[in-house]
Length: 187
Image (cartoon, rainbow, N blue to C red; front, top):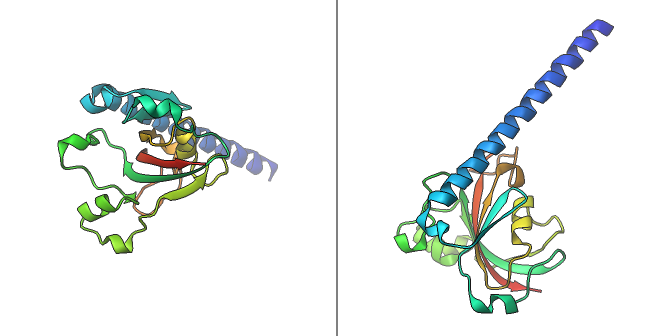
């Protein structure tokens, strides 16, 4: 019996190590996909971009008055609108190119209408959340810290900082995400 338990422990440990290695490889593949996309996209390549703990934040509307707006810090309550997309390398996020992909979820009435959905059936109020209080998933929470009221951001979020191992409606587990965020207010 002891021998069986020892063998079982070795098999379980091996399976766990193999799964960890697979997740690390998938995470590295997603990071390389983000880098390739950001380097090759004429739209995104011209915008200010920074990396934050494995995710990328692109500022779509750099403006002189930005520095005079409240900056988002842990504990701040904020209001924001968003569009959520699953990441793929041919994703067209340039708003000047016309046809954009449909997000998996949004609270922007003009996007909901363009998708042909009934805006009366979708919530269109801004999200109100407190940063750093586990009200947002990890990548969204981290990507908003250091942004300012009035910012329009693209957040490229690897699966481990998004929904990770969970299937969320039409989003499969381990799917990298892109969120376009419009920060309405910071309190």
